[in-house]
Length: 286
Image 1 (cartoon, rainbow, N blue to C red):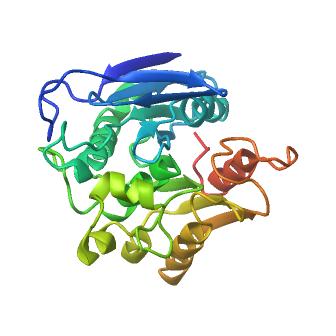
Image 2: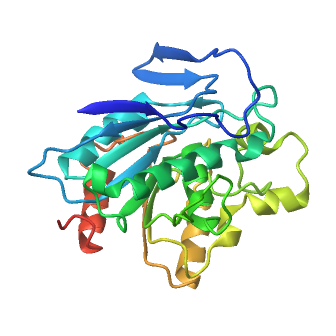
């Protein structure tokens, strides 16, 4: 069962008043949403007999230009519901100087607000407030990794001082780094501009901000990904290992980018590997 609510009850922070020009585009088995200025949170609840109290917030990809709400949102939510996980799909704002005072923090504001809503509403959603993870695809993986490495700095109004640290991360072909050697330049430009400073690039290169407090992480990538280099996942994994953070990574020979749930080798299902990882980390026990 799906319900959708506005992410912000009243004023949207960091927002410049503008017309709502959001568009939903259908094609090639994908549903993408563009020009997002009003973020929402869609809730997908598992069957009561399956519910185990674990929750995830999904950040679909889209290069910080669109949000791939279908294949990297709805479809994935259904799979996690099947294993008893309560799912929240985030439709986050697209960075835009015409609609935001500070575009670079807009998506992170939306994700931190989603974490706050889910954690503070744990009893209402029948979830464990200590089992809230983030799933991120592509640029949504960059957003998820940012939340997992920058949680000490709140970019939202947080009057109750809610813990904004995700309890675990699941990163699927994620953009991790904004360094010239690893980044997707179009996504980087969309978030922090065409000619970012070295300091800004460093601030948003999440492999450089991993500490022992970074949440346990599950990573999936394909070696032949031409949009987001596999070294993004490799560098993040290496940083996790160096900081003794529990981590698991699956690198596939073929898959390209944006394979969503289905790799070319239909016998190999990353969702099954992810389910095993979650189970081994005590995330699927009621």
